[in-house]
Image (cartoon, rainbow over all chains, first blue to last red; front, side):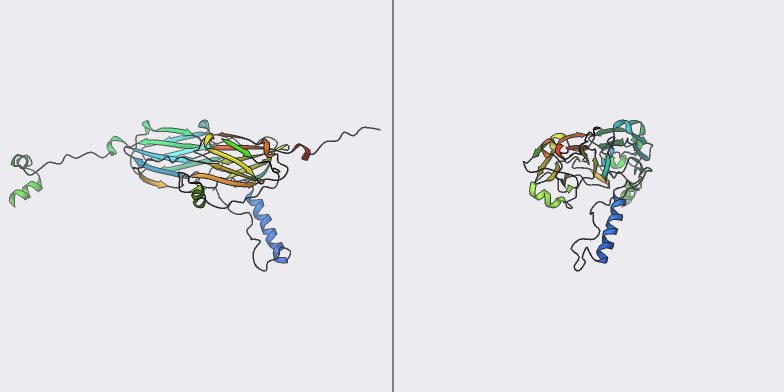
Length: 178
Length: 144
């Protein structure tokens, strides 16, 4: 699990009234901050994240489009798998830590992920396309022919010939008896 | 990509966050295309003779990134073009798309005149050389 916890460095603001940083409670606050900092600067997890990256999914005409921001991952680091009802994206990147470097702060902790999404309609897995540009992965999943909406021809009942053309329809029978 | 540094004394070791906030305010100040500004996560490394900072800023371009140093504060701003067509049906929305902005206070041991930056695969990497005179020197000890 990827935890974003980078919004503050001190869990105790310096401005608490009556809390001197030199008092006993100030000492406790400093210890807590140090503990917090030691946890926060370490990569959280080694196993694959199932909640990162976030995904945006939308329908655009006959396509379902799924997008994820995965900066630092290259094309060869990523796998996109599709079935009729499921999309899975997987990635594993090499460490971006420079050689002989001391990490002072680590917030970009995910190096492995796997996310699966159930798709709301059947798609055609053979025609799925994926692009990766500037850290943005976009997968286009064409909706299966069978699942596409069909335009239904509406026939007019106004004229006599049209009415006669639909003798078996319950609607036209009802209208005929009316 | 634009890198600017003022002539003041540059940077250094202790880097802290100054900018906890967001974008809604920022946008109003610089009138960008998107509604919200996001704070990109960063990694910071010490490599001995220099520091390296990596920012996750996906979906932008090198030309749309501005890196400035003023009064020992490094500011990274990246404009992100809106990328969703107008007439779509949203099915799942887990993140927002908007400009990125983050500020980092630099220590005095950084030579802000010689910053360099590279943008690749959605990651902005800044290299911040330390001032030569601040680096530890090795003194030869000779037998007398």
